[in-house]
Length: 358
Image (cartoon, rainbow, N blue to C red):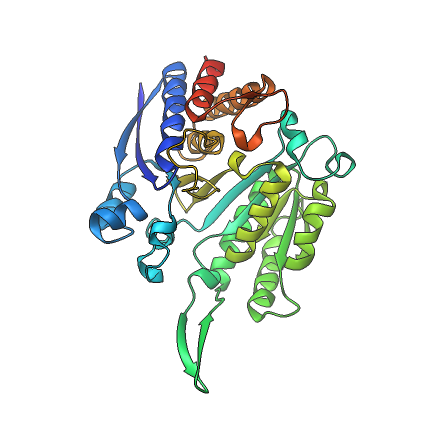
């Protein structure tokens, strides 16, 4: 039997609750498809700050590097909001991405048939379905550029710097074009090249990379137009390529078009097979401990883990099919519940997916 090592970063808020449900499903998949998963827990985020004073202890970095893949719940919460930026829980997330060399974030935004009613757009706009992949650059840009505060003319001022090299842009562009080759063969590059010098370099580099992919259609959109087009005509998109900050914004917007941020998984990948997998939603401290959080995005993140890091494609497909079956059967956590649906809690939803997988 094949064995894999998974490091768990359960995190803060609802993180431990939703990770627990993903593990139920992953273990059931392993039992059915002939592999086993060995889990190691490590601290990151607010829980790490409380225990060690640091959002990302060195021991956590080493545990992640020793694993075949990393599964993350969520980090952050009101409790740590007043800490300096370098000591806040989110600094741990940025740090682990950098430590593992995870430069590409793949965020699928898909409308499941049973959840079409949760989409805020008119039926004539959304059509039968939506299936978009947002490819977001993850370790560069304004989130990692120089930042600081200073006094100017007696007033406090602050600055953040958007900074990219051609190598950083080229490697993320190739991820997007390769993804498009396996999908609808279309890439929408999103930038602000009419204003920002960093975006002009971004577009120039993407155009050069595109020459190696003559079979993939490339279109360009400014970020403001892209945000508008996502709600005006989302069916036009296949793969969206964007910088760190633009991808962060567009993926959240796409999640709302899909009906619920609680349904969307993500994979953060580097040069090798190891990746970090997480739901795109936050730690939701307002509902933590109530047993009502939606675990499906974390379960689907587990499916992406099987696909991209462990090459367990059949098991990944089975988990995704089980999630769709559960939705077709009417199971809903409160965030996606509609009149007539079967309202369930976090644990019940996990159990339902396990049953559908059997």
